[in-house]
Length: 439
Image 1 (cartoon, rainbow, N blue to C red):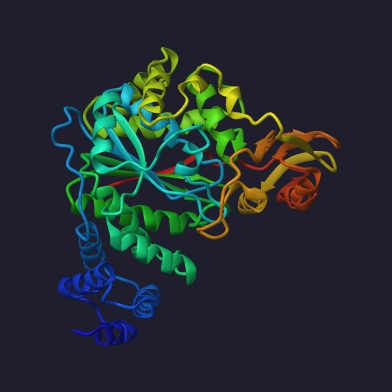
Image 2: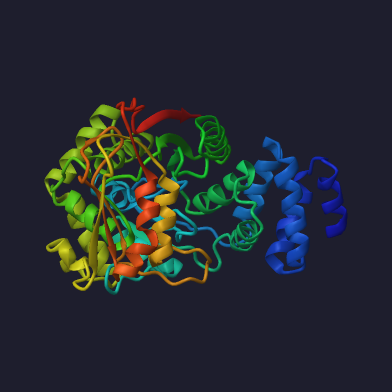
């Protein structure tokens, strides 16, 4: 069938068979389809949707559009974690070394931030010298030596996804459950995993802002993992406020290092709690621990005895970064950066935080990307000094902005103040983990 035939078929709401979807992905991968033809068909998919059979065929075609990774010679269960993205969402930096310290091999292929959400690769590149551009053989070498590797998608790994994601992002077609599932799962399944844990965010800082939408996405993701024989589980977690103490690349690495050093305060506790929850589920799915309670205890032990931190130190050395930041995380904080406080304009309780606006403000001063080609200022960000439900008085500090100049602060200060709404009643907190979705 020609591109026009396939576009016409989905435009009219018909269903594709596996061969038709494979023909589309082959055209994306080999360049025989023009960008405008790809965009037209993806828009038709976006509007009319895909059923489970079509979605499974799309995942399969994308998965095998390039090479897959073979870690069968790594003598440990293989697992990974993926998050749908949020503000201050830094748990991968703890989960990978923590799972490795517990005996799981983690070949974590990560992405960059775009829009209001942060990206794991950008956080890692705030570590001086750290190299995320690893070849397949380098990923395997690092994995064998320290139990985990943190790298970007190689050119040969699911090449169809790079093209499709770029066009979806440029043409406002990101928020499609089947297309999100195909994008995430094709990359994760290409890692040759035994188990996968998914952190699906819900709330005003997530792509899926309602619990209903997050639940639908989680179910489709878990179903895709099951279809391909990977033990898969999803956690739906709250993104109605930034996660933890900091949002911003170097600041988030700083927070994670302090946590792995055992230096946890009330503001960073949610980062540790969610990291342990997700890692514990990996340990159960891979059979390393018999149940969730035992797995949580194992994770806490590896934080307290320094096992996770030592794994991270070894990984930094192998990926050419500066391992001394594990001894002095303050090295990540740039000396010349300026700090400006946000203060409460009246008494009451923090009853709402516009998390998307917080992420957008950080991006506006260079902490994230508006366009894929934008550069990153790793040093800027926000210290979240208050959380939902906190009581404040007029003049209390609710947050501290890390930026280059007073003019930068003035450009985003009012937006950030407005993102924190103060009310007369303490809001009900629904919890960090909202639901668990299993196969």
